[in-house]
Length: 307
Image (tube, rainbow, N blue to C red; front, side, top):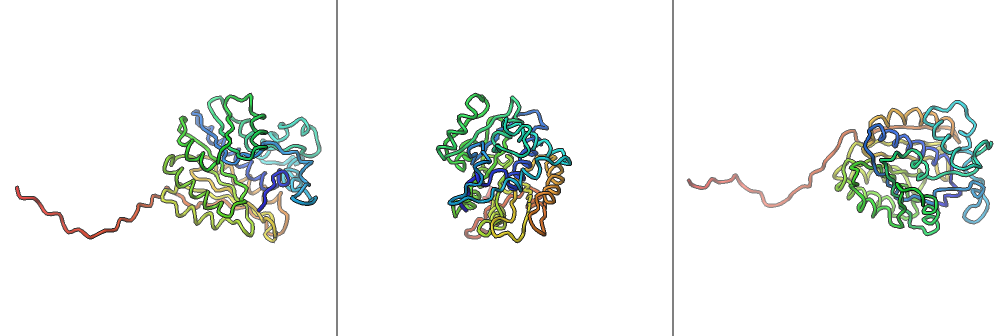
């Protein structure tokens, strides 16, 4: 899946991912203590939607009209989605008063807008041009640091944070054939180092990438915390991408209740075919610890030493 994000920016998947990401941030901010936001694949941070029709080899219909475009002039948005759209409008002067979104923000800017003085952002992006764009965007932000490093390595190296609270967004392009194995491997180590962190994994629902493989990998983790799955399917018959999902390990209190009405609204508003749906379910309801099986010769009852 060659994920050119300028082409996909602002599509239904971005809308779902960013709306739920903001709810995760709000839920964490119910407590006064600060937290680290770690973005493992931060991207360029800003996407000019005029470039969206430039596909990999030829012009293609952009995807944002069926994503952020459907929410842009909708007056009946639930509160969470209203606040999300308001942030997108505020991102760039070209958006203010426009009849359609012109420039779409990435996850780093959206989270930074909600960040409090006690919150901190670490943005990982290895692609040189995207890293440069991020660095320039946040050059004046003391609480934001951009890293030219592998985000999976960052999950090991930056956790646990001094704040003792963290939200990690794992949002890779799914170009590598072993991407899910990399995600599960990184989470395996991260959970050992920091079992109480909040980990959110976005995934597309395509012919090659699906939730089932990811879920199998998560179930294999020896330290699996409470895990919530949010799925949005806009077109079950699509040959490209029928929908997407977000898996949240250790979802903060209040997130499930906030996500449910937003997902229900998006399943109706962003539908592209019959059978659109949204689901919210638990992959694991309670923390599960799988102890390693120790094999070896059987030992008989312990004998007492003579007094």
